[in-house]
Length: 183
Length: 183
Image: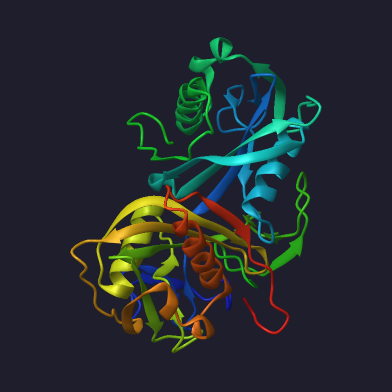
């Protein structure tokens, strides 16, 4: 951020009075510009024991596999965001059963919220951000071609929990920065 | 938003190519400015069966009672944000037990994440954003002087769930706009 989005003058980075963190501040119109984490909402869509993954048609991680998920928009609930992203990326309607994964990724200021749900009628098709969508059994998950560490972490915990056969617990965690990757 | 925070030129509101929502777009440097919901993280701090509430020393809702909570900051986890806010507003350290309340408030684009936890040693004191902090039994909760609908909803569900005596379930919900209030 270089300029004030309210008045167009230059902003400076400093700790405002009464605060304890640096913010971009406008000395012309006195607006303080707060920057906060974003929510990435998505689903673990299940159908007949298999999980639906999407092969990314966009950067970052073009060609790698992920769960359908994306940035939550203003004016929606977290559940609506998760269902919308699943429909946009995988052409699938899901009936949400529970919140399964809640992962903070502090080094990129994102919070992932991944809901478990069942596909409606088993229908899906690749959306414009996906090269392909496919249902995978646990043993066929492309572990070495997953797009993001949070997807790997979620799927590993999910399959382990599902073996217990009870209600899925909420899994919380933090994704630490990998030394050689951005997220 | 009126000006581009990257180059200082005026922005326009329109749907970018490949998108389906209006965004503030800069035709000079071609930056698209996304605006997304904020997370409000906080705690339901418990001590010897009582719940710690804070009487607000700031607007909005000056003088009304709330759970300690506030905007999550970049670079922290949701749990860290909840504990930080509880320390800032109520001078209290909490040991988090579980995520209890997850509430979307779409009309103000906020997502509340309220963790249940126990006070460490029962210690607390009003922070600079609180006029007073106090532990309340269920029957003493100032129901007609609560600051926000999400606080009421959380406390009502919490006391009902706690009567069952088992592990607290995750409560999810949506807070609808009250016709006469902003949130």
